[in-house]
Image (cartoon, rainbow over all chains, first blue to last red; front, side):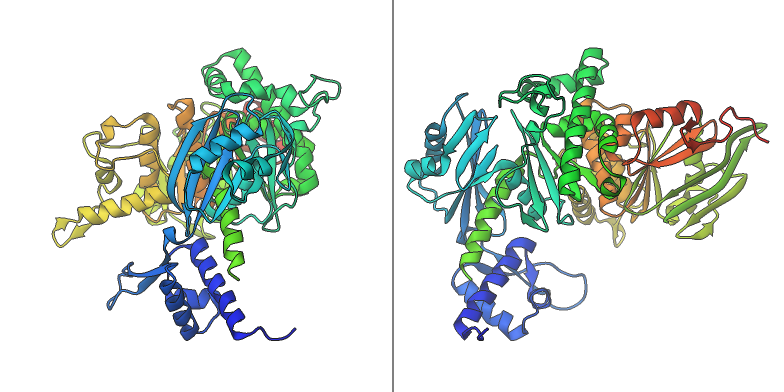
Length: 363
Length: 254
């Protein structure tokens, strides 16, 4: 390989420096030198360059408690580059405008009519977005998403919907469409507590149940895992997807997404019927999860959406059936957790996807 | 192992409450201590905390045997206990409670700003978003918020082992969830947590290992990932489950 030309090298280093600041937050020049393995004077030149272009600024910040002049901190200017993330759910469309460094600059939300189709949802997204000056726009949609097309979404009732085209028609911008669970997994790994898990599984509970996977630190290519359509009871209840005995159908996911709070509260207060529902749902979730853990061998599983409430109320049932459905070697180091970012995970993760592309393009 | 108990025995007069109990808790893990009423859970905690002297056995911290005769010894070893009644002062605010008895001084006056900043940082590191105003009196807080303050107080002092005695017993369902997530986060940040609970759901939600006491003896310690609910119930109620458990669960000793 030929040595990259000086200008190209400079661009790469610029992008690496910005990436480091975006991911890890404000740092001193010394810390940057250490982290990037570049020469001190190179870092200095890059920092001057990036502050002239308005991407970063240097502040007198953190005092270390030691004597002497406090060291200057280099930090991102949030407004320099922004990404708009849109989350489409059964009953609402949410928007977050995120600045460089992960700062939330603005947010908005509008209700979505039940049963709305792609163009209607795209129209609402366009209205939320209006004339926001975002460099990248990313949409997170629950379901099976492939190259901008929503192949199947129990939550929205869409089948083979070319949502990217819908969005591009409505807004006149170019879009990335990610599946919501994978976006949330990206969010939890980059901004949540899951940074230690190179193989991360995020379970999303909405009107349907999907799962997003990070494998070896990268979002799994393609789309989400259709956890809700793992058959847990062959020949059981008919599911909306056409199969029989899917996890979604057996748990009654569609109803539970709205009633989980009431059900778990009733179970906690001692209502035997509610206890039975919570215990049974937890057991079924553990069994379906067992198949996925066996196939995908994650290090960590996060229970997102209403599955957080279900897991914390039925952990004994979930873990018992998971223990009965997986090999000891696979579950020994498996961490079961709830997401640190809560319901913000999908939006934050979608924005991170946009930033990764944005910073990548500067290279 | 951060804390290792071996062959701990404790009697009150003729009544033997703990008999040759063993238990180990490592940094970064939640160990749940379960058992029926009167199994000796609280007594074991009080032995570790230095409230009761043990009759025999050893308590080792970082592999070195230690004598713990009063709560100050325990605190010096980095062991903090959050009791059921929380021991918070209702007439003081959140920051004052966190620093009670260990106030930061600036010369001869209290350094309120530094204390407030440190309190905010601690709560922030635990991802506590339920406390808006650190200057409100503890009396005005909900049960879950009070529990959060009590746990944060234990964490603030460079503690390494936090012992929680039934922290969710008096809480509602939403508050229980927050406290469970907080307990898990403590361990994920590198602390050792010993978690006493009656509720097996709570235990399975956060524990890495489950230790079951039965009539003052350790019936068994199982990995939460390998255990099932019925197995743990058997250990609690009969001291035995399959191959795990006491050889003579009826309490007769040879």
